Image (cartoon, rainbow, N blue to C red):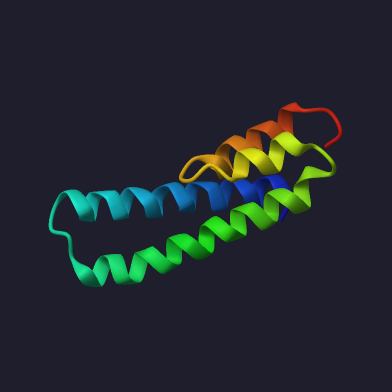
Length: 86
């Protein structure tokens, strides 16, 4: 699996997890859902940042975009594709 594909998959998983959390907050606010998905979202968020740092190769824009919650992984993957050096 390439770094770009990993970042794209992790970014999509991060976005899905935050949408689940917001959906839970807006509807039933189940403690079980937030207790399970919350830590999972945190782990995915950290994995996005670590993957972006590994993929950045000196391009600060890539890993800085990964710091944006929910959509950072997808933005970082796009920046890694579009900026020279990768």
